[in-house]
Image (cartoon, rainbow, N blue to C red; front, side):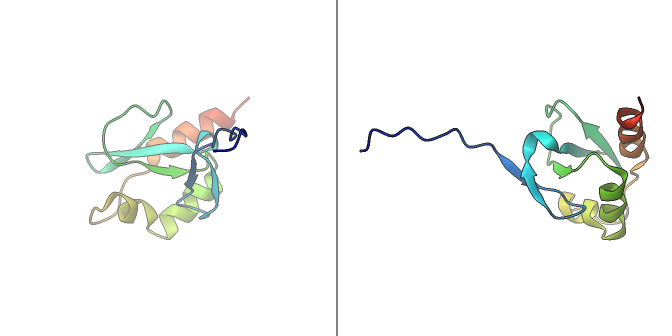
Amino acid sequence: MSGRTQAPVCPERTCVGCRERTAKSDLLRIVVTGDACVPDDRGTLPGRGAYVHPASVCIDLAVRRRAFPRAFRVQGPLDTAEVRRYVEEQAAP
């Protein structure tokens, strides 16, 4: 055992929109409630989570690629209006 200590490892996740790996803290966790995607900014909601950059570009990519239904293992499209509204509110000054 060496005397070196390892630096703490920052958890990484992949954005379902752009597919870029980045720090979990830089991404927005999304969960499914009913047939809608809901932002989970605290990371405390139950269920499977998918991560996306809090940017309209990545949300649009995820919708176009059908990444949300695939990530949540559900059939059919999911409503992303609440996620879009949340991202737009965060971007506004």
